[in-house]
Every structure is written in structure tokens, then in C-alpha cells.
Image (cartoon, rainbow, N blue to C red; front, side, top):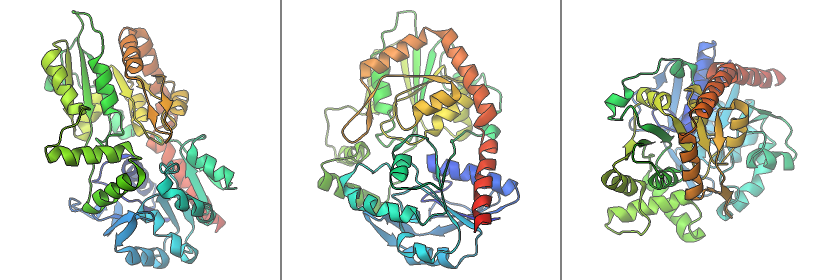
Length: 426
């Protein structure tokens, strides 16, 4: 089977979409298929062949709403003329999907689409976009959703879409079937008797770093207790076009996205403008200076060290504002580390599937972003710190369920079956 994946970003870019596409693409190659990924051109990409996967770069930026710049016509021509058995596109609101709209009836290759959450469904800037969406979805041969109850699948059902499957995300058995490195704490200057909290996500302003570090700051520890928090994440790639697009959205839409606000915060901070709300970095610095029984580590660990962070943590804490199907919860389960999560994306469904964690009370704002009261999060973190038996039980249960159902090896075979079925129907 000759398969084309279309994804706005791909390795070495870091993120949930990139990770899923890479894991599935490489395993399909191992199963004997020919896989190519059409994606954005990156200056730091060293090769166009990675673990058997071919990479086809296009210098394109933007989406339907903000406008698309660059080699859009080249990409469209590629889709129309290339001889693949099936095309799978991941995520709406980005150019590899949006650029197909005006040529979709000319793409004769069977097409599969993963909507990936429709994060802008409640954004007024995208009102016209989603009015056009049902007609586009009906021209795909099959849709894949990661959650049985979420805004994208509900949107599809409401508009009469029936040709879909539900596939969960997962975590890599190649990465997490390893031994816990007992030198991790020594390397990172973490005391052996310190309770270790971990949160992971790109520093976009929407991944819960601020909420977690604020809750950690307010933890009421006894004099003989010690706790450490690792805030891990990368600074996401942002082009000049992305900055201008996001600034336009801020000024035109009254600051709809927390992530956009964070972008503006960074830009003004570089100009020397101060804000009343402290950044996660500033809060961490205050904790490290003034609270001797607490320590905050801000990191962007290499992948191998991040795996060990998962495996050495006592509790993974997740307070993200906007998600679809967060990989980090599957990775926490794979590490045998219990997780504490707010109700974001399909996190409660992942909790039900894996049995690997706990939920903290949270609420949705008028834009359907998840928010959590800092004191509620701190209380949950504190209570679990004192309940080692519950942590151990959830950690073991999560790892067992992951091994049974949520490795990429298991999940890729389900992708393979869907893609082959679509090809056979055609």
C-alpha cells in the first residue's frame, strides 16, 4: 500500500500531531507499506528520509482563515497527480487540509481525514469556515476520531457523517519498555526523599504550566516534607507569518485565545513591558528562592531523559486549557506513573480506558477552555502526595491497560486495517 500522510508539521518538529504521525508512519513502513509525509519545510530538517519514511516538503504557511502563503499550488498539484493508494490528512485549521478544499473533487485517491478536535469551533473568526466544513467532510471516504464524545465527532454526527472510526492515541512500546534509571534524580539534583511532580507540554501558554506551578507554590508542606516540580516543554516554532496572524486575531477578536495572549506577553516582555501576572518562570524563581522545602525545575529534556522523567515521577499533573486527546496521559500510564488531570479534551475517557489516574474538579469558560481553581488543584496534589497506596495502585493499573490496548504497535494495526479497507472499497 502506497500511503501519503499530510501534516502541517513533522519530525524534527515537536508536538502531539507530529508524534502520532511519526509513530504510525514508521510502523506502517515496518509492516511493509510505502509511506510519504507531505509537510512544512523546516530549516533544521537534516534528511528527507527518516526510518523508512519519505518526507516531501512544501514551503507553505497559514490556513483558510488567515490566508495561505507559499507553494500552495505545488502542494495541490502534488495531491492531484501523485499516485498513492490512499491519502490521510491530520487536523483541520491548517494548510495541508485547508488547501485541499478548492481541489478536493479533483483528488481521485481515496481520502481519510482526522479532524483532531476542531479547537476553533467556538471562535467567531472561524464561523464561515465551519459552515463550509460539512460539505468538505462528506467528500472524504473515512474519518478517524480519537474520542467518542468531543466537539469534532459531535459536529460530524450532527451533520450526517456516518463513515468514521474511533481510534485512541497511545504511547510507544519501544520507548517505555525500558528500565527505570535510578540515577535520574542524581543527574537532575533531586533529593531521593522529595515527592516528584511532573507536567509536560509546549510552552504555548495553554498547557497548564502556570496553573500547576501556582498550585505547587501554595502547597502546604510540613517542615520535614519536600517536593519537586518539573515543568518540561519546548518553545514552539513561530514564523513571522504566524506572529502577524495571531496579532490580527487578538486585535480583531478581543483576545480569544490564551495562547495568543501568551504570545503577546512574550513579545512585550522582550520590549521591557511588565505585567501583573507572573510567568511560570518568575513563579518558579520565587519558589526556589523563598521556599526551602520546594524546588522547581524548568526543562526541555531530550526524549530519552523525558521518558525517565515520566518513570521517576511520583505524580503527573495535567492542567491544560485546551486539548483533544493528550498523548502525555497515555505516556504517563505507559511509565506506570499515576496522573492527575482536569477535564480537558477526552482526558476523562482516557482515565476510564486506562484506570491510571485521578480527576481534579475544573470548569469550562465561555470559549470552552478548561480552567481550574488553583486551590482545588493544590488540594488534589497535596492529598495524593499522602496516599502512596492509591498512587501505586493507579500506576500499576495504567501500565497494564497500556500494554494491552494502547501501544503504537496495537494501534497502528488498526490504522492499517482502516486504510486498506478504504482502498478496497474504491
